[in-house]
Length: 107
Image (tube, rainbow, N blue to C red; front, side):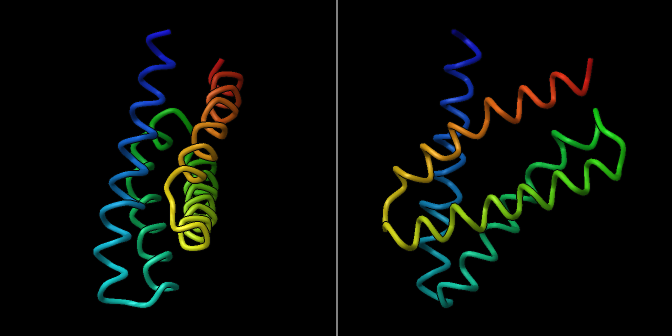
């Protein structure tokens, strides 16, 4: 139960920070495409810490690119719906699958 609460809290704060605050501030000064790419790059740059240590560098690179692509998708969803709800739900649904894959790989 504790892990579930921590995952929900981290996803919530991540989405509010990245697609709430940063997206909003950046979109006032740049176009939508630039804003989505910049927030996705920021999102991906925060995650290598979690994938570099337990995985070989090649896998870490692939995971970081996948995280960047997920950030692009969520940024597009944010733009399309003008809401954080769908991005929060998609992130929340993706994390358990990612944790399952990582737990199988790390064993």
